[in-house]
Length: 252
Image (cartoon, rainbow, N blue to C red; front, side, top):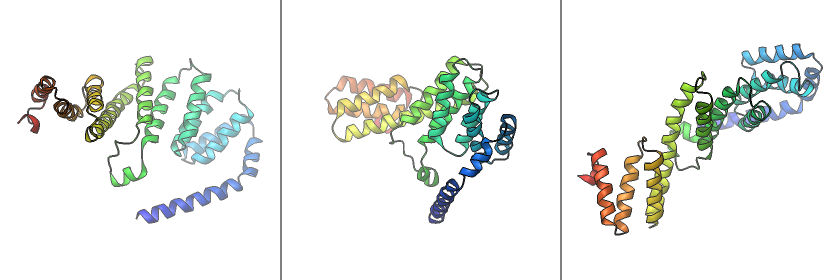
């Protein structure tokens, strides 16, 4: 199954390369059309799921009419089209350009929401999705970016129609970030870097106290305090652990 999928991806890649080689005359024909006709054709292709053709039309429209009547909407449509074909670098570039050029636009909330979605998508991994492997140990740079995008959306546009979904996504993202911090803490602990392990555990308690990773963070802290000979601090940590997680094996 996996081999056939990878083979299929290779065939698709070859088709895209061949398509790119023969697309120049088509793009020239697209660029010759009037703005209104170009926009209508692009929207038709977009609505039918023909995203790559829609992108070609939108790009031609922006290139020929950068300040035309449809310019702002074309930029927004391009963001959606890029995201639909998983061209995340192009989507992020389009989003940042739109926000920079239109800081007071009525659809900035949409741009921020899409920025969060694209950054989330960048964090995903094909093998993680297929085999359901938890790769929380990966650098969560894009997850942090997505969290900040949603955070800005909720702060600046709390009434946005995208706010409820952004709020739900932030919960999942915070859990992902907390798992990463705990895994780093465990990494330090296993290498006798107990002070560093403590720092990561405290970070989870301070900034992510509502995540499931708090229990593991407290356990790492208690073990680290023991290794450092800080018995009073260890007992305090165990009391907190017992109070919040009475079934935990360290307090039974």
